[in-house]
Length: 224
Ligand code: ADP
Image (cartoon, rainbow, N blue to C red; front, side, top):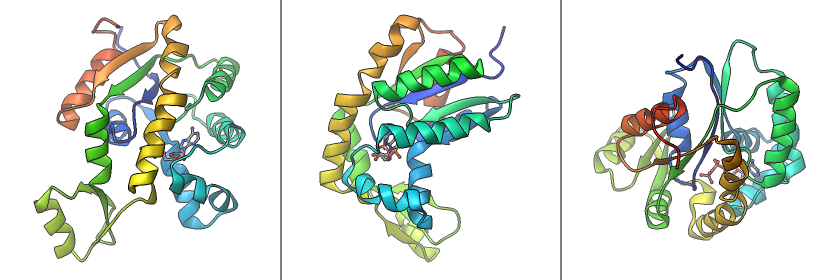
């Protein structure tokens, strides 16, 4: 039976393309997707109380406290329409967050379908993050790479500005990769016993990577 409304966790080092994939996967299934990083950046941009609390932590590339994240997810899950699946990108990021999520999902009777890890080498992650810019002020924000000369020219011609996320500066990139290795990578061990984990190669065209994820979620490829 094809999967109708999966409950997916998307993992991977910074730069692996979690948000790009999230945007493609919501076209495949009726899913509500949440990027906790994006949500926190919006809080910062809007100058909310949460934004003020997390701004420096984000800019350093460190993790926001577990309790704050767990509260955010609790509220988000409570509002999730019953006829939709979900995709979480950026949560959980620590074992404590994963344990809390397990409890919340058991209460909501929404078991996980798949835990997908996007696999990317450190050198590729650094190259992607270091060159990542956001074309800002020329219609919807677009993520581009400084090596993509055509995209850079298009942005400038449309009057856009190329801005860099504060956590894409070198020190923050180093922190984010270290935090990912120390805190988030162990989550694959946390979920493996339940038979939920799949590793997907994060190099290639976004549509190809999405096809790999869909195949993994639908159980068409053997799990490692
Ligand atoms: P990336 O995965 O590329 O580092 P994200 O956009 O997912 O970027 O997250 C950006 C930042 O938001 C993280 O470095 C961290 O400071 C904060 N953040 C996002 N999700 C969480 C979480 N679940 N727990 C703690 N901090 C988080």
